[in-house]
Amino acid sequence: MLVIAGCTQGAAAPTESETGTIPSSAASGAAATAAPKPTPPQPEFSSSMGSSTSAPAGAVAVEMLGPPPHYLPVGVSAGAGDVTFFLTNRSLGVHTLAIGRGPLDIVNDHVQNTPLAASTPVNVGSSATFTVYGLPAGTYAIWCTIDGHAAEGMKGTLTAIEGPSASRCLGAPGPPCDPHVDRGRAEEARFRT
Ligand SMILES: [Cu+2]
Image (cartoon, rainbow, N blue to C red; front, top):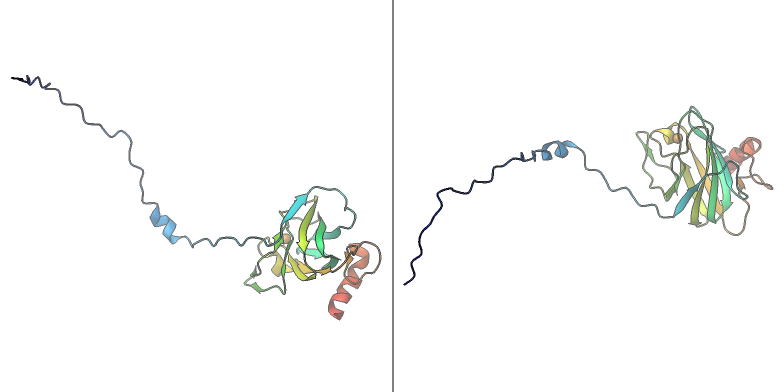
């Protein structure tokens, strides 16, 4: 006969004391008041940024000027395909250059168009290249994605032309665009067409 001697120890195991405080999970209250953040649309065309102090051959030179913020020139053209912009920021704030299907729809100072590609911000006093890959021929809107800048006038057009074509200002035949020289012609051409 087996007898188990009940040798129960009197000392009860100490209950686990809760040392850590439970983090307040009431954060949902604050989150509920914030507007739901829409998923940012994905650019349709791949692009890349590069650093350069001078315009690469065939690049579309665009100056970022202001205030008020604007591009010079406002109308540019390039061969369809891979389009490289040479962006120079001579203004007092940072700017970007986005490409999208036009015309621009600006509501309450906000551009509604979805960029097909967009540069990263170009710092004051610096230059950068922005290349968009595989851009089909057509006319595109370009604009600055910094809040309010497009509404203030930082916008323009890019015409991508089928076939091999040196980048140049719209309406300016011949050598690569000089924004200062070609400004008048570019704007003329824009309103003519
Ligand atoms: Cu801007």
